[in-house]
Image (cartoon, rainbow, N blue to C red; front, side):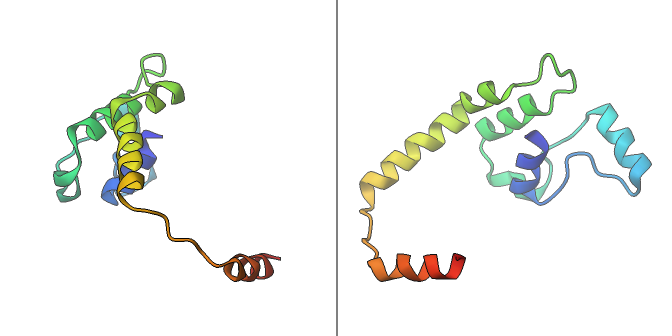
Length: 105
């Protein structure tokens, strides 16, 4: 989960290398950083979650449940509720759903 989140937020891999051996060596070292330009606008809470997800020792690494309960994820849920209260939903015409069903079928 940590590698995926890191990539989604930065477009970079946390353990880069010029070839497969170098990549594996960097994964084994488990060292990464947030020095990329893309991370300048990423919150400290998000970086904290990534750090907990990229812990090398599997016994100390966050589980899916711990990640789900992390404060950054909790804040996202709160922000969604606030946004849904701020912006009202726009009703979609039934014909749109029929077209979508026809396209998928």
